Image (cartoon, rainbow, N blue to C red):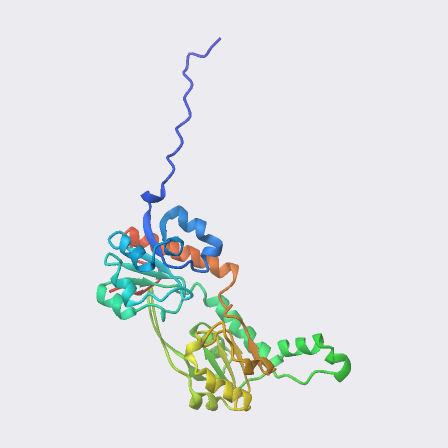
Length: 311
C-alpha cells in the first residue's frame, strides 16, 4: 500500500559560482605559491592573469583600470612600479607573497592610499631553521666533507681536517633568526634589518653591509645571509672570503640571482643555497592561508591579517 505521505524531493544543487561573480584580483606574474595552490585562489577570486593575456601589459592593465581593486604579486615577478600603479586608479591593495618589499614602490602606494600586505611571519620558522643549518654547516664543514668523501679523498688523504663548534662573532643577515643568536649568547655584531614591529604591523628597513663591517667579523667570524642579496656588498664579501679576512659564510641569497660569484665555488668555508629558505610545504601552506585571508579581509572591509602599510 502506497504511503499517504508525499516523498520530499531532494534540494536542488547549489548554483556553481562563476568567476565573474568573484572579486577580481590582478596578477602580473604567477607567484611561486601558485605552483601548488593556484586552484584554491581560483575558487575564491577571479584572477586576472596578465601573463596569459595576448595584450601588452599596459593595455591589459588599462582594460581593468576601473575594476581591479586588489593585486597579488611576489618578489620574483615584475616590479610594482609607479608606472604600473598609475595604470590602476582603482587599486587599493597590493598583497605580496614575499616578506621583502623592495619590488613595490612604497611611496607611490602611500601617496595613493594603497594598503600593502606581505608574508608576515609565515616564513619565520623555516628561514630560521636554514640559518641555523647554514651556520652549523660552515663550522662543522658538512658540505665540504661531503665533497671530500664523494671525490674519493677520504681513502687517499685520510681524515678530514677539524671543524669547530664555537663562534664568538656572528653576522646574521635577517631578523627571523636573531633569536638564535641571542639564545646562544653570541655578541650581536651585525644587524642588517631595523624592524619596526607592533600589533599586526611589520616594517623592514635594510642596511648595506660593506667592508668595514665585514672586517669587524674577523678571521674567525662567519656571516649568514638569509635576507636579501642586496643587503651585503657582494664584491667586498667575495674579496674578504678569498683573502681569508673572515672565517666563512652561509649564503642563501645573492645580489644578481641566479648568478653567483664563481670565486665562491672553490671555497670550502662557504656554503651556498639557491634562495630556498622559504621553500617548504609548511611555509607555502601557511602563506596560502595568509594571502587568501588578507584578500578576503580586504574585500569584506575587515582589517588585513599581515598589513605592512595601511594608511
